[in-house]
Image 1 (cartoon, rainbow, N blue to C red):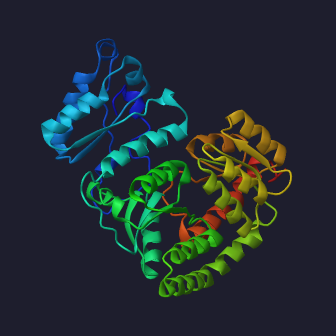
Image 2: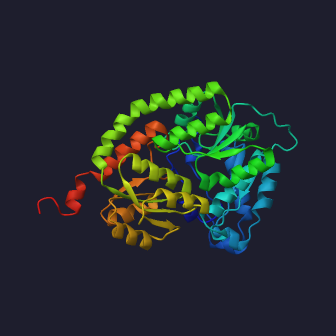
Image 3: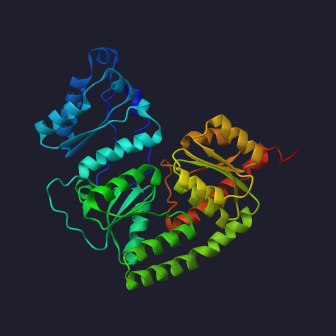
Length: 392
């Protein structure tokens, strides 16, 4: 992280991502720019930091993220990274992520552009594997990528590489060899999937492994793509087995949660769509829903899914969220870490559906975990005290 130390404060070990290999990703590193560096430039400090990190960790790949200050003073990250790459014989790639360049979507795009540089095979001939897919937009939170990989292996499909959960530098380089890209988090990876189709002729499809309905439908869509009868039969077998074991548990929570109302504010539109369906599975009506990076076509789907009178928001501020949650009588807010204090301030239950959580919410097992968490949060006795019902 090339910038003042405060810019790195939200990057160290806050994600629930798991790794089967090195855990170096849990650390972040900063050039810790001071006033003097900002006046005279921080390029020399950045070059020295890269030298130290490569020597200490024997790094094969270094990403250098720009910050607002660096964008303002004009440090040439491209030149520093190119020199460092030649010096150490490794890949050193700049990520042009200065905060003022745009919204969250622009940050995703900056990261995707850098990933495209990383996976570029150059003159190397691409040999595609028939049953290999890339899994885009899964960061292996609480081992979710492992859960989905096991489902796919059971039906006869191998995941080539996930972007970027539990992945390695070497595996990411093999991405152009896949036959299909599936996208879980469209907000972060839709652009990358489009560019990979353009450059490497890899088709893509949006899927969602949130909730029973979307998990089952996604497995069917992936199986149908390969037009293989055995894969499609195995997919139906897996779905039947998993639904049989999980549906009774979902029905138990549905009975307990009937009549409750939820507000949702998440990053991507596709996740919001899945959450509407998932809440419907457990008997909860979504009365307010918003996203930060939702696209027009996703909002059209949302409008068709929600009941009349549901408030639909785009890139809302805390004041707007508060106003509509109170107006619609929500019992629960689903969001990220920044929305948690707002929910508790209003006396509402809160579910963390962002990267800070430590339990899986994907797949059939994730659907049960979600229902259980919603029940524990909404039906906790603490709300009787908060709202003055106990002993009044």
